[in-house]
Image (tube, rainbow, N blue to C red; front, side, top):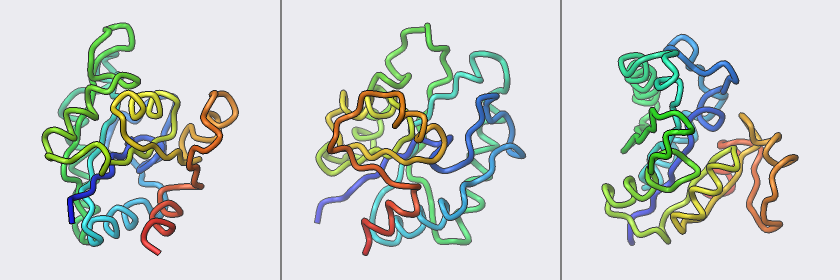
Length: 179
């Protein structure tokens, strides 16, 4: 069986999001059940990666040390559940930097797919924004929207395909996938 990869957006999918940015490990609070869902995916043989825009770094709201501490907190909470994140990619740039990594561009996704040596057709991205959807589409990978984070707003405001899979949250997606 070929390996399968699920790429998760971070803020709004794994942890609660804030329009004021998540700036510290104290502000990084997992959405109920999300870490257990990641652990279940790991145990089912999926590789898990994160692709997250973190322009708060470029804006000077927090630094790389704080970002690393947030990701360490996530790993520390996952470990006792038997879960792990196999790869984390982040874009620290401002939206007007026109970099290749910032979603809606696909740079982070293609980097993760290459680094983990996974076929795009064996990859799914789960996100809560139109830029997550656009990045997945450009990377030619499947996309699923969750209603947590900015997901409800995205459903109301964005022009999305009618057939797009939409789930209440990561837990509901994982329950459907694994059952």
